[in-house]
Length: 309
Image (cartoon, rainbow, N blue to C red; front, side, top):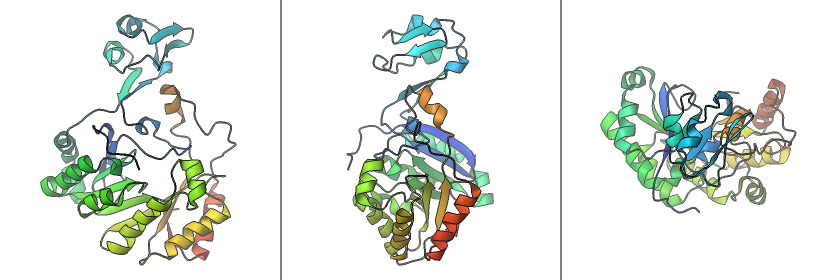
């Protein structure tokens, strides 16, 4: 299991969300995740350090950024500026000088009090809708100290509902440390077979499943929703469906499952970060409505409650 990093970074704060917990919510995205899902839609949140994004489509080829880059990490080509990631130190000088906003830094060290001030701006919407703050990532449980302070502040200072989106790949200690400050858990369940999980996601499944079981069986007062990303050829096979259903049916309470269809909304982010999109060439298509309904029916026949499909 990955050790706690020295510094926690926030790579986005998204307001007015209605898909990540009950009511209207503000989502705080913490940087860094132990999983390496090929279909990840937030590549800017996978690592634990700040990253430079460059949208070449906005580049006007003025050359101002080349003049200020101290590491000579930028070069001009016919289609615009290219970034040499091996030289870039994310000093932000290109961000400051660019007049077309083609550069952006993801991952800032933001004190929890500052985050809570931002979350508190929409306090009236939370109370009217039953919403609040959701912490996502990356993997929020990779930052137990920061996450505890953030969740505790949301409860004690703002008195709002709290939720976390998590893959549950963390130590039991990290989970138990924050659990009393969380009202709703939105937990990924992707691949149950531990060997296959390690091959595809980069981590075995035992700790993930153990943490889900802790939430379900020992903390029945906590709302819990399991989410399975439907990735053709990766998670939607009959064996994995049976494995997930079998696991859910061993929990001591009824836990609903939400099926999330594969999408390519994050594909452009990879190019802006100088990365290859891992799903390119994998012949993976967006699942049809009929396929989603078929999977939902398979789970229902196996005794699982499926929601929001």
